Image (cartoon, rainbow, N blue to C red; front, side, top):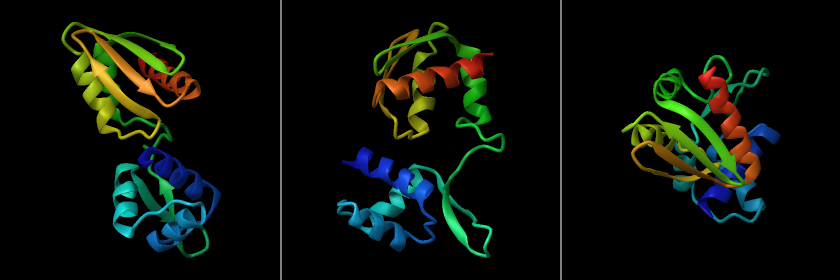
Length: 150
């Protein structure tokens, strides 16, 4: 339920000019989600949603992204460039090969991003399994990793 709610939150802030947590809560409730302001507040923090100027003198919620508009921050990129040797996907599963002993570090970095499209990670010594919500998310994730490795 949390993942669906968070996905809907991201959709709502893209579709509408949401200015307050109360407004977001009302929009969610109109979509059939039962929630509280405290839950919305936690979701906003986990999803890294920030307020940005809306161009009309007010502010609206927006997904926080790095200055170059990409999904991952520099720390994440550096760690991945240094430890990832390859990646591939099969349906909603992404397999990332790393240098020996570094799969757990790569997995911890992915977990720290709190990405709604990531269900979870499982790491061994040099292999990391990332379970995505669907095949499209796995494809997108592999493409982003590929960009980081270039």
